[in-house]
Length: 240
View 1 (cartoon, helix red, strand yellow):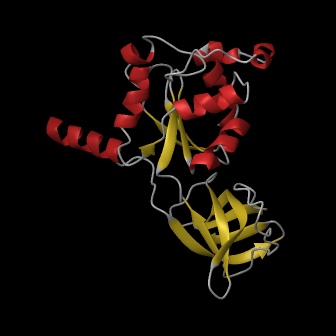
View 2: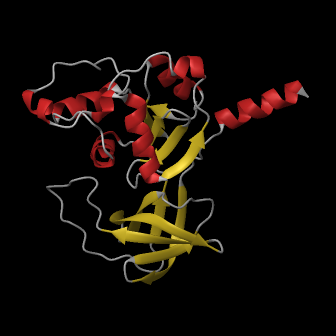
């Protein structure tokens, strides 16, 4: 019996959040909402709408699932501005019945917000299907922007630069998995063991450049994340 329990635990760790790309077609369009087969999608997941011309599929809108009822997903769509294309014309097409919606195209790429290196590595080990970008990239982004406290809008701005779909945030009691664009909570995982989780904390999170020489401008901005658990517990609770 113990062996079976262990196998089930390892299986659940190795196969956590579903990262397989989902494609389906729009059944109806109502003002700024599209409806389609929900498949195994979750409320809060973000994706894109594609339409086809003679030779190519073109992204014409972004979409975020707002509700799922009786196997049908209702998603709000908006203009697609995640990736700036200064030298290409902006698509003016509106989603139509038959256009394709694509979800989870970047869910195999993520990064981790954690209080220390041991917690950071714990999350990565327990999500082996996901390619984790190093947290130093996000730390460098915040430093470049003279920011101390990462907020949802900063995650949204950063993730497209590296085609990242998910953000894992370790709070005082859980590991929470968020869609990086909608910042909707998709999954709650077990936290690192307490002796690891609370052994030490770095601000604003673990990275190899956690204590850089900050630009003068950042010294006049909020620095609530210096208390790691207080800050991220509050950040996570606002999204639930």
